[in-house]
Image 1 (cartoon, protein in one colour):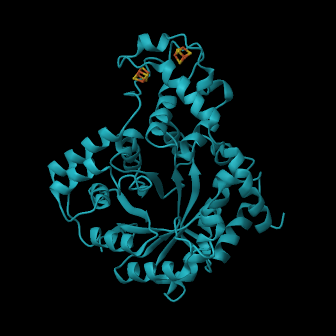
Image 2: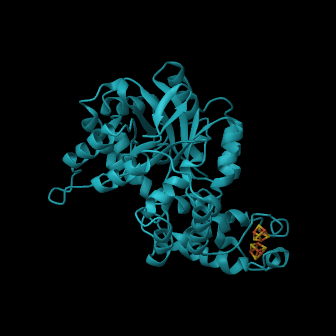
Image 3: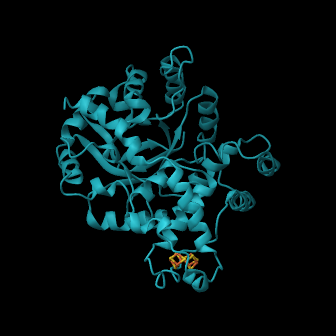
Length: 394
Ligand code: SF4
Ligand code: SF4
């Protein structure tokens, strides 16, 4: 197993993500026997980092993870859990909800704890004095109930810098979506640079972009097979991340034993990508992209009569063209209604200013249609309010 050093801790670079456990088709419940078998294999090979979250699998991930770890000494592994600030019914007793998670995980501290899903939408909570989330978790860290505090991040570069500026010295690490496609598609490269410059450890989620890079279209997969016939598509995605020194932990949400075995093989030792392999991965990334070639230069912004954040909207558009991820629609929910794509009046000013010749009004019209017909995070979050209220006896 490849290990990483983080502030004196020796952590396996492969982290076990607990958000996608397989379910028993007969009962519809988590297949605990399979979870136990996967953990046994992973732990025997040296994995010592397990990542869950309060809302994963309707609150059952924390329990299944704890059950699978019950026979191992607490000090032999690290657990990470997350606070669901993006799903709160209103201001709550943050500490009480944290205690619920501690109880479910049968522990009196979390090695790593994260504010879940900081983005343009959830800033209504994370950026609000009324919810005092950051303050409360800062205190819990001072009390030793949290060893390292971080946040998982789904927003844009601008927000990342603003959030870090607002809370200097509070966070130890940040979890971002990073893979060889999002390196340029979602500006993961810039996020990596910002976090590294600030001395924060980087944790990676979605290393294979929800499985997309683990099972490439046949013609793209063939390009990788030509380079390394025995290697899986996923192994290339992981090796890309292994080559970035400030990426401390790479989380993989494993739900089948064969995935665990394949990942363990990739993390047994480090084999840097050759120049040709890296070039091929970036070519594959380009061919997976759809949408518009916006470079975020912002030349178009000054002349927009509606004062729209055009590069932000086009980043959402490009991401949605690759995959209609909920997290992107959620970011758009965070905009004021008069700043959403439907506010574009189609005047065409931006097209004249754009050095890339992008037809912005058409892209925004398409985005507006996708957004208006898509699910709204506020609606989905309502389902989670009840479980939080129940857990807190509200
Ligand atoms: S076409 Fe839309 S985005 Fe472009 S300048 Fe006009 S209002 Fe703004
Ligand atoms: S001018 Fe063109 S490339 Fe620059 S931010 Fe606007 S749309 Fe993107």
